[in-house]
Length: 165
Image 1 (spheres, rainbow, N blue to C red):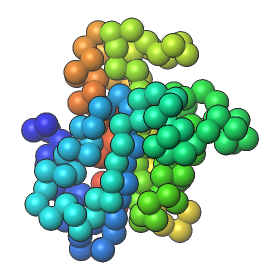
Image 2 (cartoon, rainbow, N blue to C red):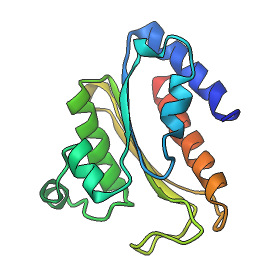
Image 3 (cartoon, rainbow, N blue to C red):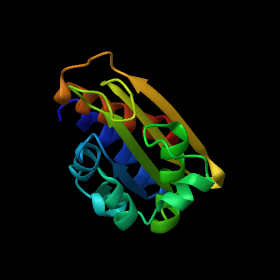
Image 4 (cartoon, helix red, strand yellow):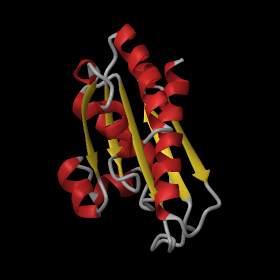
């Protein structure tokens, strides 16, 4: 968490100064992004909510994103930029937040069931005025689940911070 906290503090300052809000959907980071954002005093001013969306069932129940919507958007493969882009946009709409951040990845030691190697994650942000950005990150670490979780969380927070600036 120590590497995540400075990023979260900088994000909090920017969100509070602008009166912006954020919602978060995490998968392989297991709540590290939300925990970092919530560790800053006054988080209730900007953090609207988040969920660890780790399974298909969680996606359908917590985000209300059924398979039909994924197919219509060409986002059937979960570990893809198309998937997290749809997820972040849906989350932003559902929370009526200024920003929404979505993450899904393969932390290891095995890759995803879709053939993605461990150490790979897709991140997306949805923001004001139709802003949308997705990136794929690779840590190159195949067998260290915790290191990948921390790296994916840091990359997620950096993506939000870059867009806030």
